[in-house]
Every structure is written in structure tokens, then in C-alpha cells.
Amino acid sequence: MRRMFAIASLNLRQVVRSRSELLSYIALPLILTWVFGLAFGGSSAATRAVRVPVADEDHTHYSAMIVKTIDGSESFVATPVLEATALQQVRDGEAPMAVIIPRGFGRLVEQGATATVVTVRDPASTEAQAAVEVVNGAAARIAADGVAAQATFAALRAGAGGVYPQDGPDFRELFAEADRFWQPTPPVAVDVSEVRATSTHHAELSAPAGSQYSMGFTVFFVLMICIAGAGGIIEEREFGTLRRLLATPVGRPRIIGGKLLGIASVGASEAAVLVGFGVLIFKVPWGSSPAAVIMVLGSLVLASTGLGVMLSASVRTRSQLSAISSVLSTALAMIGGCYWPLEITPPFMQKLALFTPTGWAMIGLKNTVARGMGVPSVLLPCAVLLGMAVLFLAIGLSRLRLE
Image (spheres, rainbow, N blue to C red):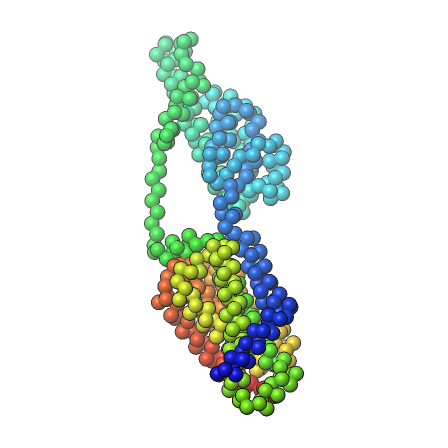
């Protein structure tokens, strides 16, 4: 066993000593995880208020109510601009929508005529749709206050024989009185209740935005690095290193065992680095069930090592393995849901993922990391991954040539 561990530790030392290996195994995975996590689901983007350009051409108390309502929302902030600037910012994609309050808006409100607020939005933006609802709410409030003020005008006029009394309140005062009924709560409110199907589904929805990419790239790079590490067997065979090892009293089983342990050790080290990165940078709850996480990642490392050995036994040169491994790793990552959630893919893709180690690894990690489930939830994924490891190793070792 001591000699087998010595062979495995040699593999680890070779990785540490090589700058190119460190770049491929450490720097590149961390950079890609960070870039994708920030670009498609970083936590800072989820809390940043969306800027909404507002062109207030009216500058009245009534138009100011719309601007104040937008600013009062936690998700949006109104930015005063000219009308041409507002339209240009939406065209250039700098803002999801723009609000234009035309001149004469307040006069139409006081006259009881139809006053219109113009919104221009990107139809593909969900943020724009939410901002439109905020503007609609402000418009509904102004319309209700205006109708109440007009009704009061009509009542006072009717009581005074059809002539509005000179000492009566003006429209602005009646409007303000009607608007006070909205404080502290609207006169008519909607009570919204949430019903969650399961606590696990709620936990997944509440997981940090970077969870998908932290888990996905961990699975992807562990797979890729284990396959690439198996290429070291081919390289040592080409250089004659294995032939010299076979001439020593170590024995073939210990040599193979040491090589397998070395590949698995590199894969496990890569997993540990990426898990730590996800915890520190994206606050992903990798530690919610440490035992379950270790079981899934350990099973993935074994399955990936077996796949690497099977591939290295099927090719002749290291360059052939490199060409195959990059394409295969990317394809398995895409099918297995490392780049995007499996739930958004077509049904046939979800079924196809069940034939890949990446698919089962993502199922297990989602159960424990994103959904907060424990060891029982990963038993099936781990069993399938270990079965794949046995199958791949059996095929690979039966065809592996050390000379």
C-alpha cells in the first residue's frame, strides 16, 4: 500500500510543480465559474434597483406622483431625462423601459378628461413588465383621486343650484383630500397568500443565484480533469516510464492502483477548491449536508476516473485523448445540466441525462445543496455513479496496456 500511495503522491506533485497544469486545473475553472456566476446569476444583480428613465414634460403635482411612485418601489429608481434620451436608452438596451409624461397631463386630470402616460419598453424584459405595473398602479391612483374630486365638484355645484360656490375648495384641494384615503393603506387592497408545494421546492427557489454555476462547473471540471489525468498513463507508456516500473518489484496491481488513486486525488482536490470558491464568492450552501456532498462528489470522482481509464485504453496517443476528452466533457456537461437547469430542457433531454455521470451528479448535488435535503436524497445518484465507475473501470482495465 505504501508504494501505491507513493505513486499517487507523485501524480499530485507533478501537477503542483507544473505551472500549465495549475493554470488548467485551478485558475481556469475558478475564472470561468466566477464569470458565468456573475454574468448569469450573480447575487449582486438580484438586489440592484433597475434604473427607469422618466421624461416629465408636464412638471405638475400629478406627474410628480408618478415619479414618486416609481422611486418608492424597492426594485426601481426613476431617472429624470429628456424624452429623446429616454427613447434612445431603451433602443440601446441601457434601460428596460422608459416613462414619458406629456405636457398637459395635469390639465387633463383636472378637467376629468383622459390623461395618458406613455411607456416604452423592451418586450423581452421581465423587469420592464414589472415597471409597467408600477406605473399602472400610479395611474389608477391618480384616476381614482380625480374621479373623487370631480364627483365632489358636481355635488357642490348641484347643492348650490348648479353654480359652484366661490368659497368652495378648488380641484387641487379636493384631489389631495381624496388621495389621503390611500394612506397608510389603499382603500381597496389585495391580500396575497403564498402556497408552496414542498419545502424543498421553496428551498431551491430561495438558493443563491450562483448555485447552478457553482455546482455545474464543479461537476464539469472534475469530470474533465479526471479524464485528462488518465492521459498521464498514456504519456508514461509513450515515455517508457511504465515499462521501467513494471521491472521493479512493485507489481502491476499496485502500479494501476497508484495511478487510479493519483487521478482520483487530483479530481478530489479540484472539487474541494471549487466548492470552497462557491461558498466564499457566491455564498452557495455547500455545507448544508457535508456528508451528502462528499458522497456525491466522491462517487463522481470515481465515475470520472473510470471513464478516463476507459477512454485512455481506447486510444493510442495523448493527443487523441485530449481531442476526445474536451468534446466529450463539454457534451456530457451540456446534457447533464451543468450549464443550465435540467428542468428547462425538453423531456427527451432530461431522460438522456439519466445515462450520463454529470446528470446524476447534478441531481444529487441539487438535492442536497439547492434543496437542502440530506443523505437519503443522494443514495440513488451515488449508487448509479458507483455502478458507472465499476462498469467503466472493468472495461478500461480489461483493455489497458502498460507497455
